[in-house]
Image (cartoon, rainbow, N blue to C red; front, side, top):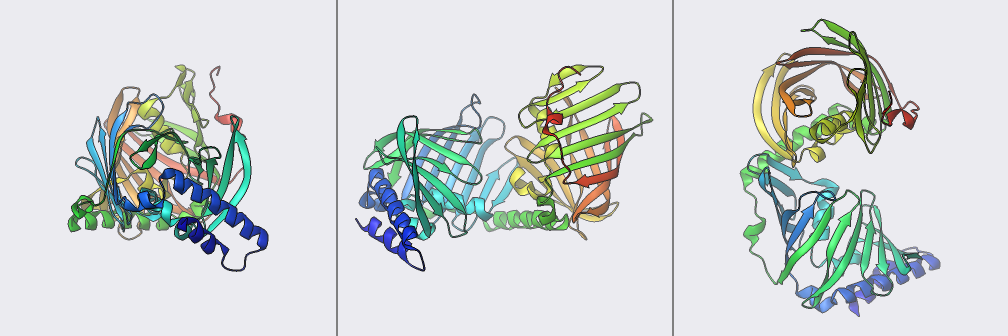
Length: 453
């Protein structure tokens, strides 16, 4: 069995202790069996392309969407997702980079580790390339889950990132993958021709993939994976602006911020109301906003990692849903500035404009949930200085809003806008930060819903 020989030889080189060599050999034996139960080296090598039609739910109970994938060797793929609101979303990889496209939302560049993992996983011949993709492989102790014995293998890829595969001892199938960013579970294995595939896949982000149909081919038309030069250029320029913004706000320093407590003065100019607001944030996404407004009493909004909620003396307690919750989670995300490319995969250049602080370039950003707004980045500093979008004002209402940011100051290596101005048809509001403390000890209990306040 050549795949076993290749894995063992690749894993045995270098200065490795004998116990580690044994662990590597045992891991390769488990992986070689997986290759065989998939269909074997001969069957896998014949597959140059796979077409899959999948029913996709982004969360349990969510509407099922139609997802069609065409995948081939060399990291090339074409994914088409039909959505109710924005029609078809297409993601195309030419093996060097991926591009997400939608006629309404724009085009986004898919790159970095997320792209490299997607390209690796989509290769139908990936099972034959394990020694190349994962230079270090180790057998870990078996575990028993739901009465079944599971073989466990730890793999380290060429970037030094570890993932753990769990293989059913009886069938030899891979039933789970644990990666730093997600855990993936596979089940309902069926034979399709000479090959075995999982018809049901779920992950810890809540997504459910149910395979409806699959077919194999020995070749694809290269045009399936082509992207126009103009589209590539626009996506790359937008990605470059977003990358520069991450550096301009102190991206690495921001990643070290695990919690933050801010106190700000809020001035609603058109109503003549002023009050102080305290915002407590804790990674990954907990937040509590509290303030007392003259004549309206004390108000709270929070998210404890599970439930978004609001409580006030006038309206009592209620849970936040839909866009209201999304808006609060955006406020909760301490790392939002470093993750704009992830949060908003769709982008469209919106030209240049002279703003009060200088010339800026605009990018329309969006996600599968819809348009996020137009974001304006200062030419001189690279920082985000304006957002034009729709802001949620209630369960079923929104207004067009302009948010301007100025008076940038450095706090623990992070550049923050100490003055923000919100301008919309119903409100003109200025928020001025009075104090900021990073990495303070925070009691998680403060984020829990205040149902009795």
